Length: 126
Image (cartoon, rainbow, N blue to C red; front, side, top):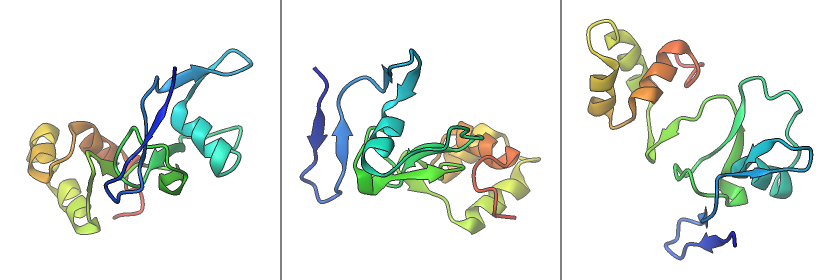
């Protein structure tokens, strides 16, 4: 049985307590956040072109419609949002400091640092 836990901590989160993928009719898997977005917010384009559904609250298990957004680059990792100045600092330091160390300094995962460097996350920050 799949279920959603509505939190009572003032965050407005609705925590999905089941599998994060499910099989749709047509035979392919879909992430639960995509399904929640389509159910409560609206249709997704057929060609995602690197865009995806992510949460604005930083909780990867949240499926609250108000917390779901669609676009390019998830700036929220471990509930931590980087400022544009921090992103610029990361881009400037990448040649002298390892991605893992930068992640530790800024309280984010190395994968986010890598995505910033490759232009996947925070692509508009120069």
